[in-house]
Length: 277
Image (cartoon, rainbow, N blue to C red; front, side, top):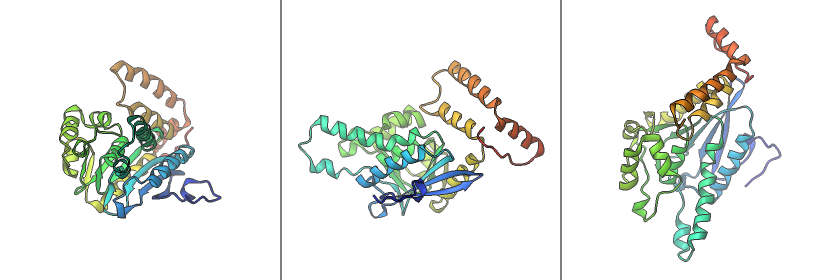
């Protein structure tokens, strides 16, 4: 991996990934592109290491507003590279478990970011690739994108937390259908099943995702981060948990300059300029 003297994530080279920054209202949107199109952006060892490092770098960016993830070429992400499993038939369950947990934690670290994450599914997202999209907060999908979790068709139990994320995103009935049958679906059905919230032509999906990220970037930063925390992990366990959380979180935002700016901007019919304080 190539290092540079500038430690800003957008000025650093990441193997098999592209990381670019867009500036909006004094804040940054990270656009991450899986950049291994000749292998349908499958999760190479180099890409996995780059992803972990990039997520760590993004966590340190106080100006980060949102993250958009997409793929180069015709695929979003074809999932994990299982060739190493075939090449190591004598590996023990203990060794394989340790290796898989490291892999899961590397890719699912996207959930440690405190800003909204958007998967712009421009093409096929299969297995672990779809699991990564499910780990994001929002999913927009291309009409012809094929997505699915056909683990059992390969003789594998599902991984990358799909037995949790699929029920969380689309409900237990949809999760059982897709996990047990392994069937592959396309964009319009993904939206109908609640797996994505928007379906568009492949060349428009990233544009829609960036539009959403820009809207997020112009919203109040602290309120947005508190909302991300409230909605992650399936949201609140009970109605009363939601009431208690919102009573505290809304009270915090009521004390902030950003709230006063938002009210003043609405009264003056002008865009607000939030400063995160």
